[in-house]
Length: 266
Image (cartoon, rainbow, N blue to C red; front, side):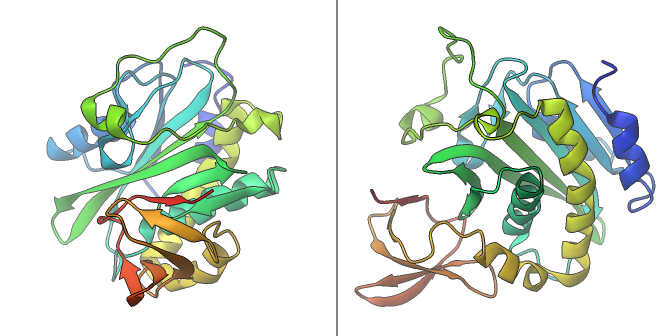
């Protein structure tokens, strides 16, 4: 394990909040989310923070791929047994945790684009992918986070993307080092303990504990947006369940994260 990854410091900060937590740093893996889901299905359901220095088959929402050369991004997954009273809003709460940590580090212009993207200006800085699997009375939740750290060297090209990724609209990437001179290792040391704390708070208190915090970071509020199903409307924040509230010509509707992809109009 490279000495500069702060695995021990993260464990010391987070393990008292989540007894049994382990921190792993792997040089390369297909997908940290996929690995933790495989472990869960094989009976390994302990809490773990798994960091991949490189992912050969990183995944985002709706089957999109996430590719970057080593050192250009921070990619990790946090897996744990979880039993909130209501799962609604978990990805938004994770976004709040990450964005607030980034703001504390000096990236004060980072905001959230519903349902799971971190944006810097009009460009995508990072994303969140949450997956769950049945685990007795609880479920095993895997919270995947990917953040662009620095722009790849000129000439670098990602592997050929799958059909779902190729069909997705292109979004210009943003890079954290354009506003804050932090490495992936330094960022992980700040993000991970806060994320553990906030996911456990979500389990206890649900989305309501994060709703006002999300509203301060909501980049879509008051903007006209287009949905992937062709509808358009004015974004009016999110509901008590974390759904996007959209004022359309047909009236106010609520859009769940599983239905659509949302992109602000120019």
